[in-house]
Amino acid sequence: MQSKDILKNLVQFDTYKDKENEGIMNYIQQILERKGFKLEHKTKCLIMSIKEKCNLGFLGHTDTVQSGSDWIYNPLEITEVGNKLYGLGICDMKGGIAATLKAVLDIDWDKLNYGIKLFFTYDEEIGFKGVKEINRLNIEIPDNMIIGEPTNNELMNGSKGLVELKVEFKGKSAHSSNPEKGINAIEKCIKFLDELKQFYDNLRLETDNRFEIPYTTMNIGKVEGGKSINIVPNNCRVYIDFRVIKNEHIKKIVERINRLKESYNFSYEIINDIKPFITESKKSKTTNFITEASFIQSKNKYILGTGPMNAHEANEYITIESLDKLVEQYKHIIDELCL
Image 1 (cartoon, rainbow, N blue to C red):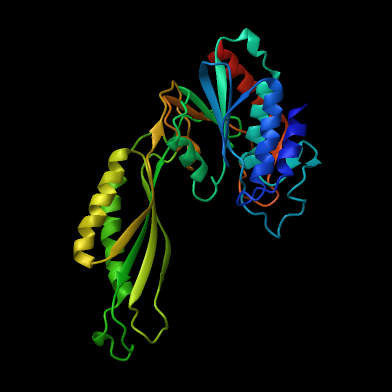
Image 2: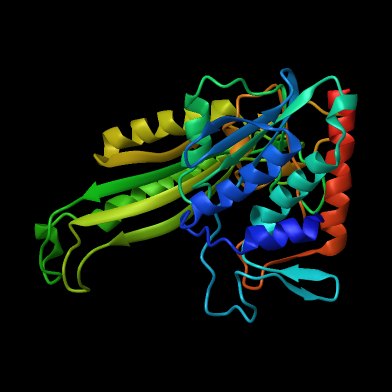
């Protein structure tokens, strides 16, 4: 079976919000069992391995985002145009899963000393529930892990961390003709954001050139509040995103939020708190997006997948050359680490 045939079958499963999770996991399990892999764990996640001692693991999520009305191809079928393969999730990241399956099927495991462990997850696009489930298990994670997210065949050895916050301000309503009778929650939010921005301007002076954007970034992604133009708003909510280069920045951000809370009397929720990671390497190439690699407790972890990188876009595609190259890259890694 060729990698394109495997990919065709994977794309046919509608795994937006894990709709056909059972079907795709059964398909993957059947392929691997015919090769001699044994089942280690199966719920909505699937973990399979070959040989007792595993020095290497591959991880991939099976869910996709939703296709939009701007697709010109059937998202649940592979459409081949020239050297391009179109289909929902083909880049993010069924192409990586197909390459993984093809690579392990081509390997003569009798000639290798170490085995491999394969992890297939769900709910990566929304809440990372699949990889979090794996972390709760007592199954051993290999020292070396490959996550098959799209990288255009470039080996990535790190990723920034992520802190996402929801901050809520309360005020007091009043008619806009006499605003002094009220307490304007949006004004409180603006003053808070101004102070937070001053803190951030200092934080970004600390750099790490191993990242493409070598400093921690801050984004005010969403502000909502108020009811009408002629009413003093009694509520305001803001969502803030930090992409951090070091663990200490997470601590500094939370400490500053708590200090500002004393001045502005707001409530807040940490939506996500994900630590950055760098696997030591002679040459560093890191991602600007969060992957399941950030959750895996492994000594050495890398991100390597197909391309070009156009995840979540209409008419998502990869090139045939990229898929074939990735299979060979995976086979080389297996030969190198499992001898």
